[in-house]
Amino acid sequence: MEVNKSNLYLCKTEEADLDYIVGAETNDENRQYIIPWSREQHLQAMLNPDIAHLIVKKETRVGYVILAGLLDSNQTIEFRRIVITEKGKGYGKATIEIVKKLAFETYNAHRLWLDVKVENEIAQAVYKKSGFVVEGTLRECLKVDGKYDSLIILSMLQQEYQNECLNYSKYNEISNV
Picture 1 (cartoon, rainbow, N blue to C red):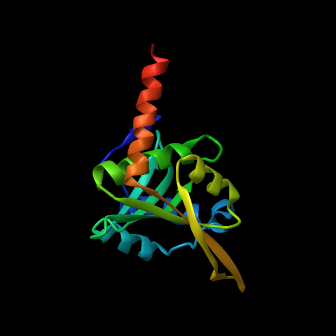
Picture 2: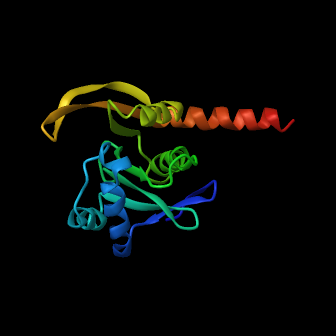
Picture 3: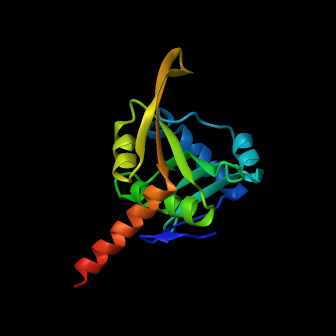
């Protein structure tokens, strides 16, 4: 499975990628915004048919993504994790666009949702700009290092994605005149 956008593509995570992933999660820039998993947890996720564990590549790895709920009868997919190691190059936004296309066009999701820590304002802005809608806040639902963190829930519905694609197509038709 390869999806391309801006020379980025997603491919299945392989066991050889796990050191990179665990290293990315423990990096100071990323650790504060996620709950790091062990190598074994990532390996189990890779083997689970309900989960897509994917590497984001350009020429080399620039991040990874985890989607869960691929087999959900409600057609709801959780955008469980995105970690981009090459910051400030637009790879996060481009990866989100690839994930939306994958979720709605390949996995036929009705709803794609995610949670993000309240203090991760940069990610929130990127998700909102990418068309995700804030549904609410799970107040102080995570206990991390003796303090409580809150999560914001955001989602996009298939119809919203289709409207976004339609609007993009109309814009391209107008700009090509």
